Image 1: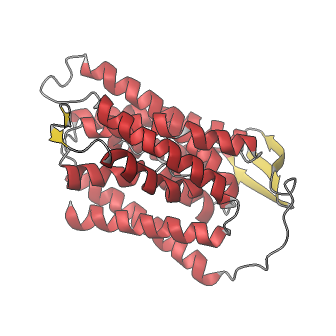
Image 2: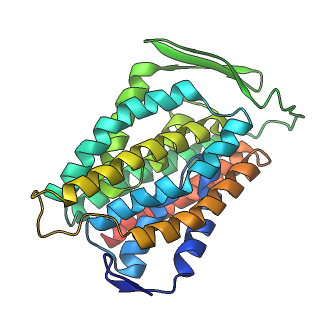
Length: 295
C-alpha cells in the first residue's frame, strides 16, 4: 500500500501491529507510545519530513480515548492535574509547531537535546528503583484505588490515593508543562513521555494517578497540534515543505494504538508501580540512545 504524504510503500497491517505493541506497554505509565513511533517512522520507514510530527499527533488523537475511558471508569483520572497540564502545554505546543516548521525542518541537533533530557529522566527512574525497596503487598479495595479528596487552588494541588495524601505546587506543574508542550509540539510526541516521569521522580506522585492525567493532556495538546499543522499547511509560511499529516498512515497507527492503550490501561492496576517504572525507564533509555547516537 502506498502512502503519498510519507512517500513510502508498506503493508497496511504493519502500522497497527507496531502501534498496538508499543502502546500496550507505554500506556501503563501514562505514555501513548508516540515518542517511540517517531524514531520507527524516521529510521525504519524513512518518513522524515515535518509531516511525521503531525502524523504522530494524529496517532495520539485516535489512540488515546480508549485508555482515558478506562481511567475515568475506574476513578483514577486526576482532573485538576489534567487541567494544569493542559494550561501549560497548549501554548507550548503551538510554539513548538512553529519552531518545527520554520527553524527545525531537519532537527538533528534538537533530537540530541531531547535525548539528553530523556537520558536524565531515565537515570532518575533507575535510581529510584534501586534505592527504594518494594513495599509489602497489601490488599487494595476498589475504593482505596480511587482518587479522592482533591483540592486545587493557585498555590497547590492536593489529593488522596490508596490511603496517602499528596501535594504539589501548581506553578511548578504549569511551567514544566509549558516546556514539555514546546518539545512535544516540535516532535509530535504529545509530551507524555517526558511529563509522566517528571511527575513520578521529581514530584513523587504515584504512577497509578499520573497516567490518566498524562494521557488526557497528551490527547488535548495533540488535537491542537494536528489542527495547527493542518492550518499552517494551507498558509504560505512553508510552501516547500510537507506539513499536513499522512491521514491514512496516522489512522492505521491510531487504530492499533486504540487497542494497545485500552488493554494497557486495563492491565495497569494489576501491576506493581515498580514494574511500570521499569518498563518506562527501559523505553525512555532506549529512545534516548536512539536520539543521541543516531541523530
